[in-house]
Image 1 (cartoon, rainbow over the protein chains, first blue to last red):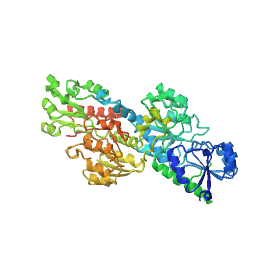
Image 2 (image 1 turned 180 degrees about the vertical axis):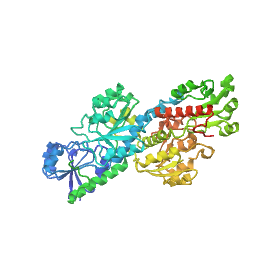
Image 3 (image 1 turned 30 degrees about the vertical axis):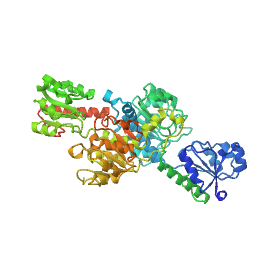
Image 4 (image 1 turned 180 degrees about the horizontal axis):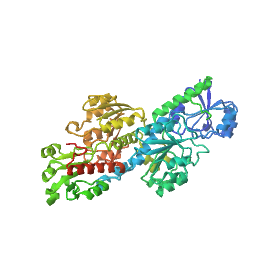
Length: 323
Length: 315
């Protein structure tokens, strides 16, 4: 019976139909207590229905603030369906000994595939040439402008975590030279480390942003970094929009200060700066680096696995650990 | 070496860099589309000693017949299906192409085309540019990593594609005229078996009489409704009408096509499809490789006119 299943609080509605399907499947095993379905304000709803709840499910779009946490004195676990956890007040969770589990590494391959696909698209003008053909221009205009060779390019990876490593592994096979910037240098890697993202940019032909959004990385890719990257440089962002100073990026692209960009994420999704729509050296994607059925199937397994582990006092499958 | 009086015929537009380098060394005559109208050449036909062709136009029997002094056809391409090799052999005409220097670019492009097709990158881009993101979400695509890859033609380009696909965790199998003993990939002597056992089929072999329409209805059926075809070889390697109807009827999941049977004509039915990525024969078209290919054409011509062995002979 539903009310004998372990309870899991859900504050906001699912962000996509794929997430909705996951929640439907989860309801077979857990009682989802949905604050968003109630006309009561969140605080009141929690006071009435979830005062002693121990576990919460959220997505990357649900801010889990100190205020929310304060309303949940019995909370012990937050499971987020995203790889990112910048939306969760981690220090407060640490203070309260609330465990946090994320999507771990399950999205890493799909994210890396998209990053590489977008990079090749920008350098080799794939989307632009596809438009050229569909517009009926090939028979009229003949040859299409030359692209830029991927092999031998110096690629700087910003954030060499699980996703960054998968990107590096793929691009090596294309003959790219990999270097990176991370909070700390990683042992046992042959890639060149730069402690400063500006230096990385100055020594790269392309930057791939794979890091998490934090206070330190907010607007980390700024005018200085873009100038260092230079007029032929390409930026690919599959992290979070706010890692790049978007206004500055748009200006640099429009004025030809950098060579091109491939963007899956933006500062104010789904708003995308309109100036980008007329540029041929830009490839735009609606934050879907992880949107494959395979990833969502793996996500469901992981979310269930984490909750089941928690409710049977076993170690979580994908805890977010202190680093 | 005094080669300035050597007359060279360019049959089709080539990159500016190549034209400049040729004009520095030779007397160059540019005739767009002359291969289809050889009589256009007129008086200079008896002076032409070399042709520089491309993947679009080379030298067929009719053109060769118009040029009594023709000694060499140096193609700005690795494919030589547009050159009448039999006629050239008869006349003792040297033929050169541009292998190796473009293999990396073509392989990069093949993978990029596959990713664009599987992950619908061009469709996503149109979705965002069209303002649709505000109205709703995009659909799921499918995962690329780990898919089984089949390669038709494990030559230089096919091998380069395999190496890249392996980095994505793909399993590789191939079909070729003969098995490659030095390769550890699985070999299928029959292309239909290859298609039945892979998810993404890359067409990377040369076009010849024996390979025309090598990807036909049977192969497409074997690949199946979840299958993807990527063609960076020649359009005529695939039975184009069969490919089009398979895509329209959902018997094939998608295709990434850089080449077509009658370029620059692209079957109209494809222009409205979201599960195809269409490219204007640009797999080797980067600034860097275009220079490398041009330099190789020049080196072949210089070697020939200096009575030295050419660098990359086909014949």
